[in-house]
Length: 153
Image 1 (cartoon, rainbow, N blue to C red):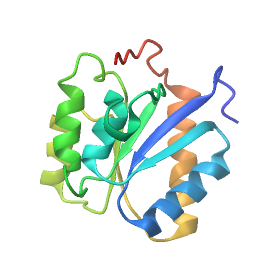
Image 2 (image 1 turned 120 degrees about the vertical axis):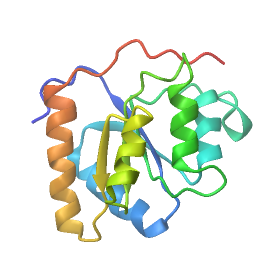
Image 3 (image 1 turned 180 degrees about the vertical axis):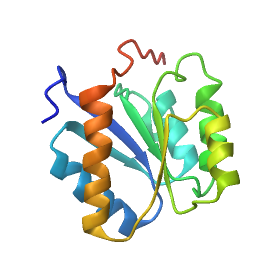
């Protein structure tokens, strides 16, 4: 499975809920496709990581994909997505929203900002693992990820 992968992948996940982080981490690790899974807990920390500033000054990891909860503290997921998509250096990074809302207006607003996908959270470990397997099959067997994501410090 995931035979199209030719290099190690890094995913950056912005999630403030510790239980959700555990569920996500368990599901992601079971996929065995990410070399690095990085968690941040709020929208400002997400932007600091991507821009290599604040506590992330000097780090050089550029994620291949972002997974963002919309309900983040300090800076919301919507605010972070807007900043990312308005940045020439960051806008190619695929963004998958992973959030509790299934409301049409929220989904549409996220897509209007340029996200690549929207997944509604589930609390069932088995159901979430199944969703993540489908996610991985699509994103890492079918689609081609951008190969020239550039983040300058």
